[in-house]
Length: 141
Image (cartoon, rainbow, N blue to C red):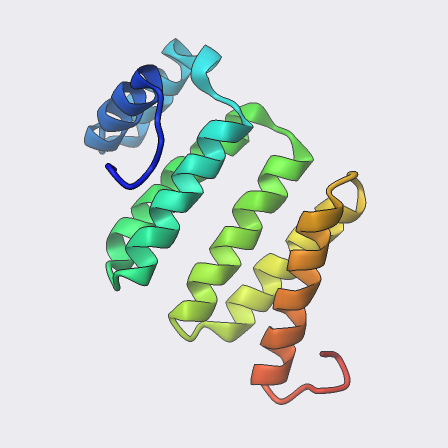
């Protein structure tokens, strides 16, 4: 975790959450510390997942994404759900699961279109274009 800038409460919270492997324990922990849940925290979780994926540690990347899923589920904000789906698609793409990546990006696109997240919308469209090109669907790209 040292490559990222965490506040001490964020770092402690994520360490504790990481070590709680039981889904019910994680939910309880999220309920207990719900005041720490925000967009910045989800971005940090996505950065951790992305770094693990870059390092080839896909199991850790997906474990962070499960934590992200729980957090964005709690926050229930369309943009944050879309951010989660965008990152999920990136991890799928890196592992060669192109159809799953396209599905995640397509769902993210629908959510971004409902928000004012223009940069994220653009990133999602770029990823969709790359994904469709990679499966040979150039007209859709």
